[in-house]
Image (tube, rainbow, N blue to C red; front, top):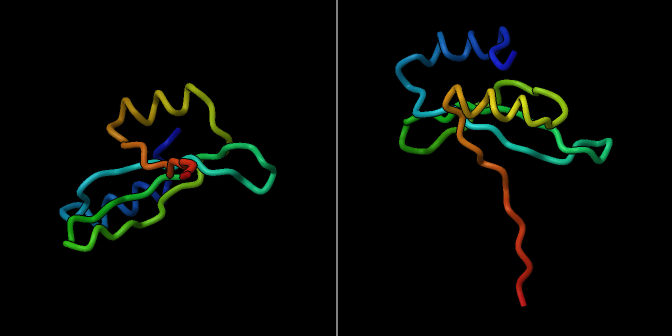
Length: 81
């Protein structure tokens, strides 16, 4: 489910250059959390290539991402005094 055609293509093109895969949880236009994935290259710059938009966040999808070695890179907001 998490490896669509675009993921397979990116993995084939950048096979020796991908450092890791990561996912991000963000608020979609319909105000519900969504998930998208990125390939991070080991090019010295940390280049992130957007790979897939997986849709709405659910626990099964997150478990599948973690089982396949994806790292959570969601921004965390904090309040400062």
